[in-house]
Length: 293
Figure: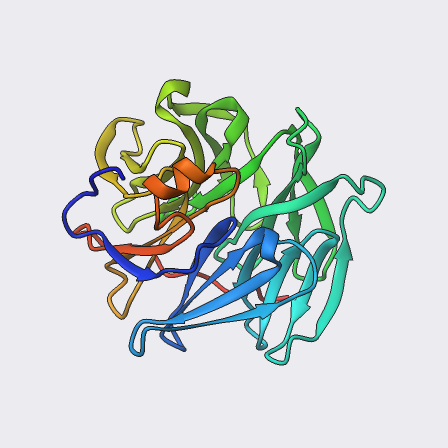
């Protein structure tokens, strides 16, 4: 087991296959997150330390609260609405002609559009893309030829979108036009050397810094908007997948992890692989926006 940064707390020992996509629901005071390959949307209540899971019937790459109630989810087959009973309503199919693909990580911008990408189940190179679900349920492809479309969030002023395609080992930026939901030229902000792990999910804090989960790297790395590495938070698990701020003051950093493809020996060394963790880094996050379609 790797030595964790003091203050890292175990919240839920779930042994998730691929825990991912945490998002805070301020109106409910709960954290949503997914276990992609177990087809489950989780809800964690920090007040009671109770975690519940809803099986949605197919791999679920990401989810977000929906302003009209329930959730919007990025499933294997595309974008769907999900109500509290577990009833799904497809809003828009995505890549039905590519059954070897599934949807992965996603997030909502300030105006309530839901952005999520696709990837090949076997991680085949450049088989995926990043899509935007607009408020009228139409879908736009915004970035093509991605391999593992992953973390996505925006700067506090909404002028920059941060994005990770894990296969590139980089954290990239796009100039962002909030009104139109369009992107400018892509630029590399920071590169994580392959020997240190693979960039995965991310979140942006209220100071504009970017927290990037490092799969295989046992850590979360915080970068400044200039691309400078600012802090490293180590975890007791190697496959750190994503992170998001939550809590009443948005000062709790929730961190997901995975157990997929770990050998018996690795699992013995990482008994908490797949668990949900929390860390209080001394900075606050930004509010999470719901889907407004």
